[in-house]
Length: 480
Ligand SMILES: [Fe+2]
Image (tube, rainbow, N blue to C red; front, side, top):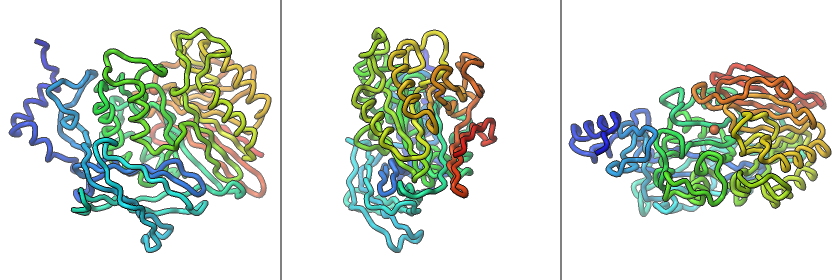
């Protein structure tokens, strides 16, 4: 018989001491409000000048479960249920609705209909809000109740700002992050970068992917239930909840939050079965606010427009021979991108990609992105397009690589800024400073901030790298 891991033994012993496994059901985090039933918070996403999508989830308890089995890098043992894992936030049947208003006291609130939630969607629902006022602050009360409407729970309250209309100049700042592994958390209440980013008061943030690591973190996902558990542990942290109640986001996904390292459609990973690539796509859509298409663009006033790219759903196998048929983005997404870039009148255009387009990447063994030889043909095609049509005021932000950098492509002049990893412990893997490409290179955690300012008919765009506590470690600015 395989010997029990020490954490598993501790878990079983403490469960027995407490009078059995079910004693865990009453354990909840002390820092949570006992009256609420939304232990994974509220996420506002896909914000435009007139629309937003609000994600809600009903949970059995107010907060995450502070006690429970602490998995190491392993599949969940058969005698441990997902809801018995430490920091699980099990769902509950009932109903949710959103009341939202431009007045903080919600006296002018619009209420959505109550929406029943059940196990099929992991007790989540996404409300699509329309006809919002541009460049306005909205306050909301995310309300929940038990099955049939009783009891009514204490709501979570939050706020967000809509984007300025396309014909209006407005100052806008946002932040971008990547690669938030659970094992490498730098604080037990959540990553330092969340309260740090909140202090900068960004209009929104972008998670460029690797939100969770199904295949390579403590707890290997091998079912839809254990994949969902990864999201509960990440978004049930008090710091993430507080951040998302004040800051809307746009979520991209990469390989680890789809299925596994460098994955592509149809791939199966034996040790993770029966969890499939398609399950991963469905769980992602269920766990973050999303639009119909995974690639999309958002205008933030006259000055700024962002494009959010999808890098997994449409890709060719990484192992395919490189050539004009091999693609990461797929023909439809690429066509949409090129047309929408050419049609945009925004002063600054920012492409946000889960993976690098400039790099440089690790020299050996990587066959996953546009900076690798494995996708050289498409990489050249898109870099040439950007050079020809967007020679100025266009830049790329990417995630995935666990180091921060600003690179300029030697042949095309394309600028790329990598957010870096979510914590210092999660940083690493860089090929080292490369003077042909790098204007900046740092192998520690942190995030990126971007600010657009309009002063006396002059534009300034600043891109800054920050460490996890917010200190600026690099800045690059464009004027005009
Ligand atoms: Fe990553």
